Image 1 (cartoon, rainbow, N blue to C red):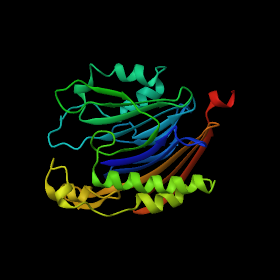
Image 2: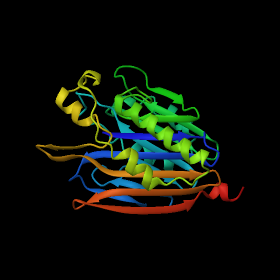
Image 3: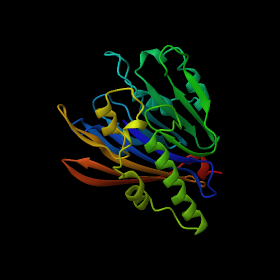
Image 4: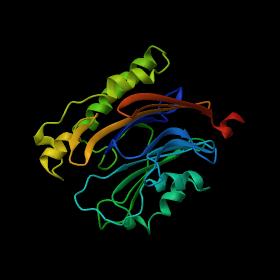
Length: 270
């Protein structure tokens, strides 16, 4: 499971400020944020499926993904991590790409997908859940949003708490005209291990499992190994087109950091 909080086109200095916790088995082969082989895409890579959970491109597009919490999954479903990659490699707008998924949504397990284009200031949310219903496509409006393992802005306790505290920090930075410190935001917001009250759990899976997943920062021992938050990524895109990735990630049980900066080519020429 993962959780993402972001502010989109609602800050005078930033087109986007995003924080993402990726939850996965710690022994799953993964590559930290880096430039991909084609030199056009930057992001982390799942070395099992070959896809990504968050990536952006030099032409000003970005995409990120979370899984939907559900009991029954398709054993031979397509890899959801391919969806962000396909969008970044395409020439389609967020809405065009989203509409192209309508006929293949049932070939994937449950997903939440965000597609954005910085130049056109368009962001689209796509989900293939609930099962049996047409794929949902909606434009994301400017403001602060949280995406966890239900629909965008679902009022899960950890999502509500993260959104509130994120807004408080962003307000302080704006009032004081301070540059955002992503390391500080990660430490204060994304390391939160507070669990939800059992009465407020979504009641989709077992209560014990949902309780373990109910914190912003997750860590739980399972028969398959340690599962939980294995990376935290901060992505900022300034109005002028400067993109900054900062990632904390686990490698051999040690936390390391990675930084990648670049500028969006189209915005440099404006």
